[in-house]
Length: 490
Image: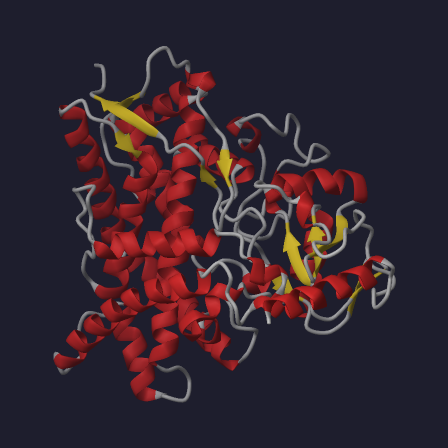
């Protein structure tokens, strides 16, 4: 069976090399090899490889990744065309095979096409979780979680121990979401060991971020050669069991009184069961944990790393914090609007290190024209937000970390300015953006304002800090940022 499948793949690939069945009027792209197409050009840093290819073939580029025709967008003008002007034509998702485990993609707001269920789930997110009123009501939770993060770092400071910034931020984000959704912590806020829930969420993000042969050769779907879908199914199963227990516990209470996300969803299911069901609800919770933990923690880790390797930035940030709110205090949301340089640091971090560098993949459901090219049905669409954020024709000294570039700029990350789209844009913009842009400055500012920081290792100059990227579902640091919090000098 396997040999027959491989023979089929090879024959189809040979025919495509000679143009048999190849769509006409595609955007330019690199020469394709038999069987693998352009897969060999991606390497272990696809966002960087695709950016270099775009310098040769242009901001609208077509590739063949295995058997998948792929469109890569690498300029702000074309991104605006795809994400805004022709948003509906490009609004479907190209779903990674592993996410079909436990039927997650069929019920997930992140992966559903634009349809009745998707609109219902987005309404829950926009009206009941990430609306201004909901975020204001939950402000005390965010302050509490930032205080716990600072307390954890203070404990490490007293014992002269190091803090893994990414792990600490992950735990903080996870417990914030757990309180918003279930009104309780699901992992220990002070201990690094954590509980099973934290580990299984981390395992899910690892599996989703792995390159999967099935995504390039769909004919291998039944085989699942790397067993990624199978492993992810086990991880999903563990999380869903925890969700089931929490849901049953809430239902046994007899009435809904917490006014958290679980209550909101259960009320909607009770009042209008045709709108969403418990499968939609649990997939929504999975989406919230997946999108809300890794993205926030990786952004904070990158921001801390950039500040540490740019001592003048650290000095200026600390000076602003001391003058505006006072040294050693927690940064609250109301403070952020009075801390423009801190906000600039966050924007510059998101420019250089967008959490999802290629955004989530889209799919063309029906043939569409784009800038004179014909994009066939079924094409996967990747928007290289990383390349757009480092475009030298738009950004002066595009590879350098310069927060001050935003001081006199009206550019924002909310999806209106296509030179800076770390959260995407259009109808499928990341719904968690309003929470992220509140939480990240609070965490970053509080860590900078409560401690001085030493890099682990002997004779390591800040400028030499390892900034190697690790590509996955989110753009993580290859080497975790482990630093020692020190008491502030008077």
